[in-house]
Amino acid sequence: MPQVQNLELSEATDYTRGMIDYGQFCTVARGAEVLGELWTPLVVRELLCGSHRFNDIRRGVPRMSATLLTQRLRKLEELGVIERRRGKAGWEYHPTQAGEELRPIVVGLGHWGARWIGSRLKPKQLDAGFLMWDIRRFAQLDKFPAGRRVVIHFRFTDAPRGERLWWLVVESRTADLCRDDPGHEVSVVVESTVRALTEVWTGDSDPEKLILAGQLSVLGAGRRGQILWRWLGRSMFAPTRIAVRP
Image (cartoon, rainbow, N blue to C red; front, side, top):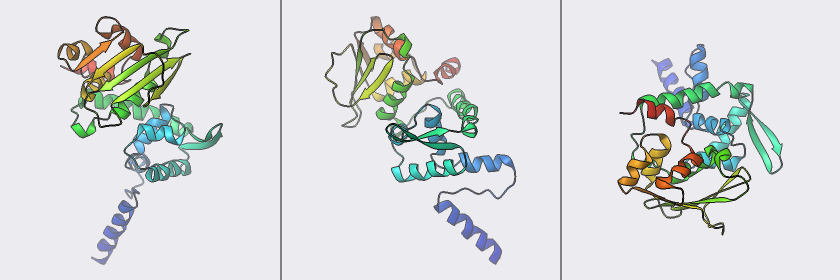
Protein backbone atom coordinates (compact mmCIF):
# COMPACT_ATOMS: atom_id res chain seq x y z
CA MET A 1 0.00 0.00 0.00
CA PRO A 2 2.70 2.59 0.76
CA GLN A 3 4.15 2.02 -2.71
CA VAL A 4 0.78 2.71 -4.36
CA GLN A 5 0.37 5.89 -2.33
CA ASN A 6 3.82 7.10 -3.33
CA LEU A 7 3.09 6.40 -7.01
CA GLU A 8 -0.13 8.37 -6.81
CA LEU A 9 1.69 11.25 -5.16
CA SER A 10 4.38 11.19 -7.86
CA GLU A 11 1.78 11.19 -10.63
CA ALA A 12 -0.07 14.09 -9.01
CA THR A 13 3.16 16.05 -8.74
CA ASP A 14 3.91 15.49 -12.43
CA TYR A 15 0.40 16.60 -13.35
CA THR A 16 0.59 19.84 -11.38
CA ARG A 17 3.87 20.62 -13.09
CA GLY A 18 2.27 20.12 -16.48
CA MET A 19 4.43 17.06 -17.26
CA ILE A 20 3.17 13.77 -18.66
CA ASP A 21 4.86 10.45 -17.94
CA TYR A 22 2.90 7.33 -18.86
CA GLY A 23 5.64 5.07 -17.49
CA GLN A 24 5.79 2.92 -20.63
CA PHE A 25 8.54 2.17 -23.12
CA CYS A 26 6.02 2.10 -26.00
CA THR A 27 6.90 4.83 -28.48
CA VAL A 28 3.22 5.76 -28.80
CA ALA A 29 3.32 6.64 -25.11
CA ARG A 30 6.68 8.42 -25.43
CA GLY A 31 5.46 10.46 -28.40
CA ALA A 32 2.22 11.33 -26.62
CA GLU A 33 4.25 12.60 -23.66
CA VAL A 34 5.65 15.27 -25.98
CA LEU A 35 2.61 16.13 -28.10
CA GLY A 36 -0.12 15.43 -25.55
CA GLU A 37 0.58 18.22 -23.09
CA LEU A 38 -1.97 21.00 -22.74
CA TRP A 39 -1.60 23.52 -25.60
CA THR A 40 1.46 21.79 -27.12
CA PRO A 41 -0.32 20.54 -30.28
CA LEU A 42 -1.53 24.09 -30.96
CA VAL A 43 1.92 25.55 -30.38
CA VAL A 44 3.33 23.03 -32.85
CA ARG A 45 0.52 23.92 -35.27
CA GLU A 46 1.50 27.58 -35.11
CA LEU A 47 5.16 26.81 -35.74
CA LEU A 48 4.33 24.57 -38.71
CA CYS A 49 2.00 27.25 -40.11
CA GLY A 50 4.86 29.74 -40.25
CA SER A 51 4.67 31.62 -36.94
CA HIS A 52 8.25 32.00 -35.71
CA ARG A 53 8.29 34.97 -33.37
CA PHE A 54 6.95 34.68 -29.84
CA ASN A 55 4.21 37.29 -30.30
CA ASP A 56 3.07 35.71 -33.57
CA ILE A 57 2.80 32.32 -31.90
CA ARG A 58 0.76 33.92 -29.10
CA ARG A 59 -1.66 35.39 -31.63
CA GLY A 60 -2.47 31.84 -32.68
CA VAL A 61 -3.04 30.73 -29.08
CA PRO A 62 -4.46 33.92 -27.52
CA ARG A 63 -5.91 32.17 -24.46
CA MET A 64 -2.57 30.62 -23.49
CA SER A 65 -0.52 32.56 -20.95
CA ALA A 66 2.86 33.94 -21.97
CA THR A 67 4.47 32.05 -19.09
CA LEU A 68 3.07 28.70 -20.19
CA LEU A 69 3.99 29.37 -23.82
CA THR A 70 7.56 30.09 -22.74
CA GLN A 71 7.65 26.78 -20.84
CA ARG A 72 6.31 24.81 -23.79
CA LEU A 73 8.79 26.38 -26.21
CA ARG A 74 11.68 25.61 -23.87
CA LYS A 75 10.62 22.01 -23.55
CA LEU A 76 10.19 21.58 -27.30
CA GLU A 77 13.65 23.07 -27.75
CA GLU A 78 15.15 20.73 -25.14
CA LEU A 79 13.59 17.76 -26.92
CA GLY A 80 14.98 18.85 -30.29
CA VAL A 81 11.56 19.51 -31.85
CA ILE A 82 12.34 23.18 -32.46
CA GLU A 83 15.43 25.36 -32.50
CA ARG A 84 15.85 28.98 -31.49
CA ARG A 85 17.55 31.33 -33.93
CA ARG A 86 18.54 34.98 -33.78
CA GLY A 87 16.43 36.90 -36.30
CA LYS A 88 16.37 40.52 -37.42
CA ALA A 89 13.73 41.43 -34.84
CA GLY A 90 14.85 39.11 -32.02
CA TRP A 91 14.65 35.41 -31.28
CA GLU A 92 12.73 33.13 -33.61
CA TYR A 93 11.58 29.52 -33.24
CA HIS A 94 11.79 27.08 -36.14
CA PRO A 95 10.88 23.38 -36.42
CA THR A 96 13.81 20.98 -36.71
CA GLN A 97 13.60 17.82 -38.80
CA ALA A 98 11.89 16.20 -35.83
CA GLY A 99 9.40 19.05 -35.74
CA GLU A 100 8.73 18.87 -39.48
CA GLU A 101 7.95 15.17 -39.14
CA LEU A 102 5.06 16.16 -36.89
CA ARG A 103 3.41 17.97 -39.81
CA PRO A 104 1.42 14.99 -41.18
CA ILE A 105 0.34 14.13 -37.64
CA VAL A 106 -0.95 17.63 -36.87
CA VAL A 107 -2.53 18.07 -40.31
CA GLY A 108 -4.06 14.59 -40.10
CA LEU A 109 -5.58 15.45 -36.73
CA GLY A 110 -7.12 18.57 -38.25
CA HIS A 111 -8.65 16.63 -41.13
CA TRP A 112 -9.92 13.97 -38.72
CA GLY A 113 -11.61 16.68 -36.66
CA ALA A 114 -13.14 18.23 -39.79
CA ARG A 115 -14.44 14.86 -40.95
CA TRP A 116 -15.83 13.46 -37.70
CA ILE A 117 -16.41 16.39 -35.35
CA GLY A 118 -17.20 19.34 -37.60
CA SER A 119 -17.71 22.65 -35.87
CA ARG A 120 -20.32 22.02 -33.15
CA LEU A 121 -18.93 25.19 -31.64
CA LYS A 122 -19.97 26.43 -28.22
CA PRO A 123 -20.11 30.21 -27.75
CA LYS A 124 -16.86 30.20 -25.74
CA GLN A 125 -15.07 28.50 -28.66
CA LEU A 126 -15.82 31.40 -31.01
CA ASP A 127 -12.84 33.74 -31.16
CA ALA A 128 -12.77 36.69 -33.56
CA GLY A 129 -9.06 37.29 -32.98
CA PHE A 130 -7.97 33.76 -33.81
CA LEU A 131 -10.36 33.65 -36.78
CA MET A 132 -8.81 36.81 -38.23
CA TRP A 133 -5.28 35.53 -37.61
CA ASP A 134 -6.09 32.30 -39.43
CA ILE A 135 -7.64 34.22 -42.34
CA ARG A 136 -4.61 36.48 -42.55
CA ARG A 137 -2.07 33.68 -42.78
CA PHE A 138 -4.00 31.53 -45.25
CA ALA A 139 -5.28 34.30 -47.52
CA GLN A 140 -4.70 33.47 -51.20
CA LEU A 141 -2.22 36.30 -51.81
CA ASP A 142 -1.57 35.30 -55.41
CA LYS A 143 -5.30 35.80 -56.15
CA PHE A 144 -5.30 39.45 -55.06
CA PRO A 145 -4.87 42.06 -57.82
CA ALA A 146 -1.23 42.89 -58.42
CA GLY A 147 -0.01 46.46 -58.29
CA ARG A 148 -2.60 47.89 -55.92
CA ARG A 149 -3.50 47.82 -52.25
CA VAL A 150 -6.62 45.95 -51.12
CA VAL A 151 -8.12 46.78 -47.73
CA ILE A 152 -10.83 44.52 -46.33
CA HIS A 153 -12.67 45.91 -43.32
CA PHE A 154 -14.30 43.30 -41.06
CA ARG A 155 -17.04 44.29 -38.65
CA PHE A 156 -18.22 41.70 -36.13
CA THR A 157 -21.63 42.55 -34.73
CA ASP A 158 -21.34 40.35 -31.63
CA ALA A 159 -17.63 40.21 -30.76
CA PRO A 160 -16.33 41.58 -27.44
CA ARG A 161 -15.34 45.22 -27.39
CA GLY A 162 -11.85 45.58 -28.85
CA GLU A 163 -12.33 42.67 -31.26
CA ARG A 164 -15.20 44.00 -33.35
CA LEU A 165 -13.23 45.90 -35.99
CA TRP A 166 -10.38 44.51 -38.10
CA TRP A 167 -8.57 45.58 -41.26
CA LEU A 168 -6.78 43.14 -43.55
CA VAL A 169 -4.35 45.05 -45.76
CA VAL A 170 -2.87 43.19 -48.73
CA GLU A 171 -0.21 44.83 -50.85
CA SER A 172 2.76 43.50 -52.84
CA ARG A 173 1.83 39.91 -51.98
CA THR A 174 2.00 40.52 -48.24
CA ALA A 175 -0.84 40.66 -45.71
CA ASP A 176 -1.03 42.79 -42.60
CA LEU A 177 -3.75 42.49 -39.96
CA CYS A 178 -4.71 45.64 -38.03
CA ARG A 179 -7.01 46.31 -35.11
CA ASP A 180 -6.75 50.07 -35.61
CA ASP A 181 -7.81 51.84 -38.79
CA PRO A 182 -4.68 51.99 -40.98
CA GLY A 183 -6.07 55.06 -42.73
CA HIS A 184 -6.23 53.54 -46.23
CA GLU A 185 -9.21 53.55 -48.55
CA VAL A 186 -11.38 50.51 -47.88
CA SER A 187 -11.98 48.14 -50.79
CA VAL A 188 -14.41 45.66 -49.22
CA VAL A 189 -16.58 45.72 -46.10
CA VAL A 190 -17.59 42.47 -44.40
CA GLU A 191 -20.18 42.59 -41.62
CA SER A 192 -20.94 39.36 -39.82
CA THR A 193 -21.49 37.53 -36.59
CA VAL A 194 -18.41 35.69 -35.38
CA ARG A 195 -20.16 32.35 -35.81
CA ALA A 196 -21.27 33.07 -39.39
CA LEU A 197 -17.81 33.97 -40.68
CA THR A 198 -16.28 31.10 -38.71
CA GLU A 199 -18.67 28.63 -40.34
CA VAL A 200 -17.81 29.96 -43.78
CA TRP A 201 -14.10 29.76 -43.05
CA THR A 202 -14.23 26.21 -41.69
CA GLY A 203 -16.48 24.95 -44.47
CA ASP A 204 -19.40 24.27 -42.16
CA SER A 205 -21.67 26.59 -44.12
CA ASP A 206 -21.76 28.53 -47.39
CA PRO A 207 -21.65 32.33 -47.60
CA GLU A 208 -24.71 32.49 -49.87
CA LYS A 209 -26.84 30.77 -47.23
CA LEU A 210 -25.68 33.06 -44.45
CA ILE A 211 -26.09 36.19 -46.58
CA LEU A 212 -29.69 35.23 -47.31
CA ALA A 213 -30.21 34.59 -43.58
CA GLY A 214 -28.98 38.11 -42.79
CA GLN A 215 -26.04 36.89 -40.70
CA LEU A 216 -23.39 38.03 -43.18
CA SER A 217 -23.04 40.86 -45.68
CA VAL A 218 -20.29 41.79 -48.14
CA LEU A 219 -20.00 45.13 -49.92
CA GLY A 220 -17.58 45.81 -52.74
CA ALA A 221 -16.55 42.34 -53.87
CA GLY A 222 -19.03 41.36 -56.55
CA ARG A 223 -22.40 39.68 -56.21
CA ARG A 224 -22.60 38.03 -52.79
CA GLY A 225 -18.88 38.52 -52.34
CA GLN A 226 -17.62 36.01 -54.94
CA ILE A 227 -14.39 37.97 -55.40
CA LEU A 228 -13.80 38.09 -51.65
CA TRP A 229 -14.08 34.31 -51.23
CA ARG A 230 -11.66 33.82 -54.11
CA TRP A 231 -9.17 36.12 -52.38
CA LEU A 232 -9.54 34.66 -48.91
CA GLY A 233 -10.10 31.02 -49.69
CA ARG A 234 -11.00 28.93 -46.66
CA SER A 235 -9.33 27.01 -43.87
CA MET A 236 -6.94 24.28 -45.00
CA PHE A 237 -9.36 21.77 -43.45
CA ALA A 238 -12.51 23.22 -45.03
CA PRO A 239 -12.49 20.92 -48.12
CA THR A 240 -12.66 17.89 -45.83
CA ARG A 241 -15.57 19.38 -43.89
CA ILE A 242 -17.44 20.37 -47.07
CA ALA A 243 -17.05 16.86 -48.46
CA VAL A 244 -18.74 15.17 -45.46
CA ARG A 245 -21.28 17.66 -44.16
CA PRO A 246 -24.98 16.89 -44.75
